[in-house]
Image 1 (tube, rainbow, N blue to C red):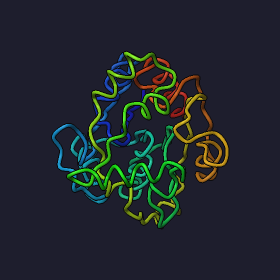
Image 2 (image 1 turned 45 degrees about the vertical axis):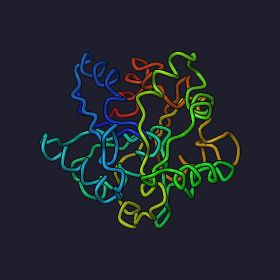
Image 3 (image 1 turned 60 degrees about the vertical axis):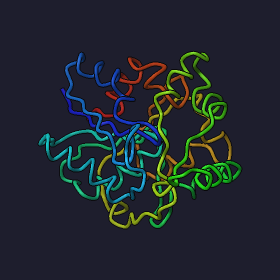
Image 4 (image 1 turned 135 degrees about the vertical axis):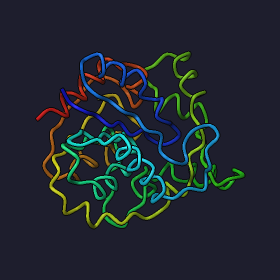
Amino acid sequence: MGTYVLVHGASHDGSAFDEVVDRLQRLGHNAYAPTVAGHGKNAERDVGLAAATASVVEQIVAHELDDFVLLGHSWGGVVIAKVAEALPERIRRLIFFSAMVLRDGECAMDVWPPQNRGLITDLAAASTDNSVMLPFPFFRDAFMNDADLATARSVYDKLSPEPYRLLSENVDLSRFETLDIPRSWLMGTEDIVMPPGEWGWHPRMSSRLGLYRLVQMPGGHELMYTNPAGLAAKIVEAGRD
């Protein structure tokens, strides 16, 4: 049986993976879903990527985890790339789950579809703490297009504003680009957060991984809520030796 560390995306916290963690544990695996610094209802929003990365590294070290599969969802792909730089010898495989794969020197905003960048910057400018909270209609149609309205509303109510620094900070990934940790790309086939075409998830983001294992399943961006059992099974598939 394996060990999995699941890193959430923007505006989420570790509880987003609660049902997936439970399913993985019932399958006999060890699974952890840390909350990244700057996330959660009462978190400090003035957080940069160094602190966000350190918060995950510290939890991995505290649990004495080794030979584990590290998954990053959405913006969490940025975090797992930096964690891989810090702990390359501990990680068996990386899974990018509909995740941002940045090139050295890029920020998350650089890979966000241009037609939506203005919305993000305007929301941050209008906030009192330089954070971003997507409006529900956008979240419902782009992020949870495979869910009914009640489920989409329930998930939205769990979200919290995302620190804009974590979206706009340029990331040094020069070391990540030299690592040879095996990689997998996992996604829902109806995920339109990155709209299909020039700015789509796959193959635009996935091709940046070099050699990778491709695993797909039906569904949208928030599969941890809409199909946690199916997602757990696909995580095992993506993470196998």
